[in-house]
Amino acid sequence: MSDHHEMTPTTVKDFLLALLGGLAAPLLAIILIVGLVVSIQARQVDDEAADAGDKAVRARIQSVGTSVAVDPNKPHVDMTGEQVYTDICSACHGSGALGSPKFKDTAAWGPRIAQGYDTLLLHALKGFAGQKGKMPARGGEPDLTDLEVARAMVYMTNAGGAKFEAVLKKEVEPTAAQLAHGKTVYAENCATCHDTGMTGAQKLTDPAWAGLIKQGKDYLYGAAINGTLGGPAKGGNVKLTDADTTAAVDYMVNEAKAALAKK
Ligand code: HEC
Ligand code: HEC
Image (cartoon, rainbow, N blue to C red; front, side, top):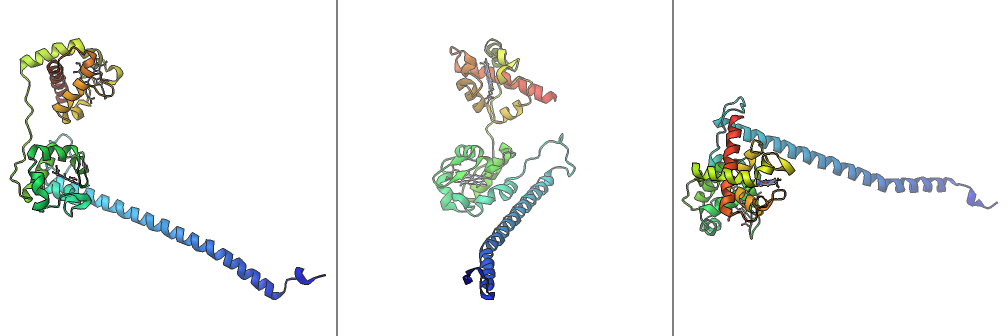
C-alpha cells in the first residue's frame, strides 16, 4: 500500500488549518455584513428619532398660538414667517443646501427678488425647478397654509433685501347675477355628472371640495376649461365659452363652500 491514504499528524494539522482558513474568510464576511446591517438600522433609528424630534418641535411651535388640548373645531392659527422659516425652510435655505439661495445672502436673493412678489409666492407654493436645484412645493410641507408660505417667503426675501408684505391675492367673489348664470350653465352642462357623482365627478356636497378649493380658482377654471383626467373639457360641450365655464365653476365652488360650512 502506498502512504497517501495514511494521514500523518502533519497532514491532519494542515487539513485543520486549511479548514479554518477556508472558514475564516466567509466568517469575516458574515461579521462585516451583520455589522453593516446593524449600523444601517441604528442610523434609521437615528433618523426616526430626528423625525420625532422635528415633529415635537413643530407641535411646540404650533401650540404657541393654539390651545394645548388639540381641538379640531378650533380655528387654525397661522404660524409667523419666522416660525415657518425656522421649522421648515431653514432646512435648506439656512445653509444653501441643494442649491437654494441662502438666508441673508443678498447677492443670491437679489435677482430672485427682482422677479416680484407674485412669482416668488407662486414658486414657493407650487414648487420650482430652477438652474440651481429643485424647490419643493410649500417647502415639502403640504399642510402649510398659503398665508404661512407667504409669510415665510416674505421673512426670507426681506432678510435678503426685499421690502414685501405678506398678502394673498383676494379672489374676487362672484356677484349674485354671475352665480345665477353659473347655475344655469351648470344645470345644462355639468349636473349630469356632478349631481350624481357619475364617473368619479365630485358632487357639490363632496368633502373633497375643501382640497380643490385650496388649489385656487385659477386651477379650477383651468381644470374645467381644459379638462382633467376624468373630467371632460367644458363638460364635453365644445360650444361653451370660457366665461360660461368659469361661471359654472364659481357656482359649484359657492355651493361646495355652503355644503362644507354646514358640516
Ligand atoms: C428641500 C430644500 C428646500 C426647502 C425645505 C425649501 N426650499 Fe425654497 N428653494 C430650494 C431650492 C433648491 C431653491 C432654488 C431653485 C433654483 O432656482 O434653482 C429654492 C428657491 C426658493 C425661492 C426662490 C424662487 C425663485 O423664483 O427664485 C423661494 C421664494 C423659496 N425657495 C421659498 C421657500 C420657502 C418659503 C420655504 C419654506 C416654506 C422653502 N423655500 C423651503 C430648496 C428648498
Ligand atoms: C361626463 C361627466 C362630467 C361632466 C359633464 C362634467 N364633469 Fe367636471 N368632472 C368630472 C369628473 C369625473 C371629475 C373628476 C376628475 C378628476 O378626479 O381628475 C371632474 C372634475 C371637475 C372639477 C375639479 C377638477 C379636479 O381636479 O378634479 C371641476 C372644477 C369641474 N369638473 C368642472 C366642471 C364644469 C364646470 C362642468 C360643466 C361645464 C363639468 N365639470 C362637467 C366629470 C364631468
